[in-house]
Length: 284
Ligand SMILES: NC(=O)c1ccc[n+]([C@@H]2O[C@H](COP(=O)([O-])OP(=O)(O)OC[C@H]3O[C@@H](n4cnc5c(N)ncnc54)[C@H](OP(=O)(O)O)[C@@H]3O)[C@@H](O)[C@H]2O)c1
Image (tube, rainbow, N blue to C red; front, side, top):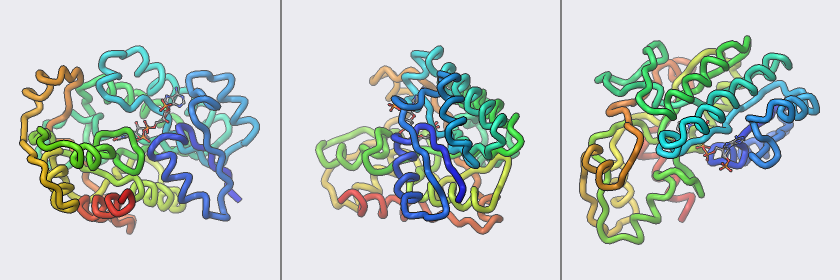
C-alpha cells in the first residue's frame, strides 16, 4: 500500500482529494491542515516526513489569495516559495514523488493561444512569482510533477468561483470582469486527473484544467442560465473594476492552458460548462 502525504489538506483541493482517496484501499493517506503541518517550519515538517516516509507527496499548501499576496509579498514568498523549498528538499531526502500544484498565473497573459508546458513563464504578480519560485525548487527533486491549473472552484471553497452561486442568488445586479480569460476548473475533475497522473507515474510539467476558456462574465452568465436566476449581469473591464474595488494584483489577460499533453496521455477533461453543471448539482 502506497503512503500519500498531503499538505494543505483542509483547503479546497485537499478536501476533494481526501474524499476520493478515502474510498481507495490501495493508498494510505496522511492529510494535514496548517495547524498540524506548517510548511514554513522545516524541522517539524521533517519530523512529520520521518514518521510517515511517504511514497508520494501532494503539496497543496499555499497562500492562494492573489490580492493578499500582492499586499504581503514577504508572506507570499515565505509560504509559496520557501515553504515549497522545505517540502521539496525533504521529499528529495525521502525519495518521495512530489506533486506540486502550480498556476496559469506564472504566465503574463500576452499570448493569443493557450499556453503549453513549453512556453516560458513570465509572471506579472507576486502570487505568480512566488509560485514560479516554488516550481524551481520542486524541479530539483528527481521524481516530481508540476501541475499547472487554473481558477479552481468547488463546494465550500473560498475562491470567487466557489462562492459565485450564492452571490448570484442574493444580488439583483452584479458586475463581472469580461476581459480576463482563463480556464475554470472544477476541483473534482482536477483531483480525478491528479490521481490518474500519479498512477501513470508522469513526471515533469503538465497542464490540467477543464476544456475551453471563458471570462468571469461568461462563467456567471452560464451559472445564471443553469440556475434560472433573474439577476442582471453586467460586463466590466478589469482596469475599471480594479480601480473601483481597489484590487491590488494585476491578472494575465489570457492565460488559458492547453491540455493537449494531458489528452495525449488519454486523460480527458470535460468542457468547463459540464464541470459547472456538476458543481451546481453537487451544491443544490
Ligand atoms: N484556487 C485556485 O484557483 C488555484 C489555481 C491554480 C493553482 N492553485 C494551487 O492549488 C493548490 C491548492 O489550492 P486550493 O484552491 O485548495 O487553495 P486553498 O483552499 O486556499 O487551500 C490551501 C491550503 O493551504 C493552507 N496553508 C496556507 N499556508 C500554509 C502554511 N504556511 N502551511 C501549511 N498550510 C498552509 C491553507 O490553510 P488556511 O486556509 O488555514 O490558511 C489552505 O487550507 C495551491 O497550491 C494553489 O496555489 C490554486
